[in-house]
Length: 237
Length: 126
Image (tube, rainbow over the protein chains, first blue to last red):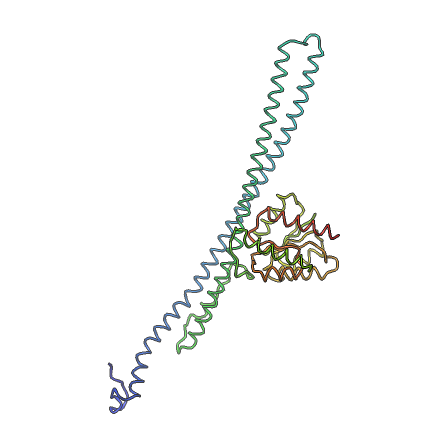
């Protein structure tokens, strides 16, 4: 154990309570200094952590916007395809009517009535019209299926809103810890010089958010809410 | 039928609007918070409001109370679409007189059912 400077020799005795107290204080000072440095270090790192969270939220929002742009363009393209297919189907139907008229005309003309060449031509026209109509229906089905898939992707992007609320919640906790650490630092004789730098950065997260937001696709929570609403309505509110 | 979609998240507004369009509802206005929504409602009107809860300036709950306090909109259909899933939240929203409540993430089918339920009940009440 180090000798205690500045004390009368009589107080150097290990039995003396004042000496013990001063010695203990000397032992605590380095520890307190280490704690101060630790808090100083942690407080300095928090704004960086908040900035990183903010950049994650921003990047997610930008990516979501880009995906939505693409999905909306694709939906528009598919709508254009549906319109064109509908026009094609209409043309095909008109051609079917024309084919039937042609068959009737051929039957009424003495020069063509009963000749196999006419009949074969008309049959071929009618068949190709039927094929075109079937293909139009298939195309319309493909377009609808693709639009449904696009809608499912679009709906899944709700995850961006929910995770941004979760990030906002974490940021709030981090800011609260930073404030507490800053207060703790102010109790030391030499508070952190760069405390001004440790203020919270402005974050790209919602200012108002739900602490309990979660991306839960099960219908349990909705069913519980529906039950409450049902009871509420039955009670005649 | 004109819808007013209210949410501070641009992403959510686009998703709700796209869902409405996929259901055949083409006439849709939007607002980023309750205050803007109420101003739009008074200035331009709407037949159906779909609103988030947590928003700056004026929350969805405050918007609902403001709308219900306005004689012209006392019976306007309001659907709350929110992440808030606690029983107390649902009860608070019902007390504020929303017509129905959807928890995010929602499905287009779920949205369709709620809209139809609300329209059916408000038509029957009228």
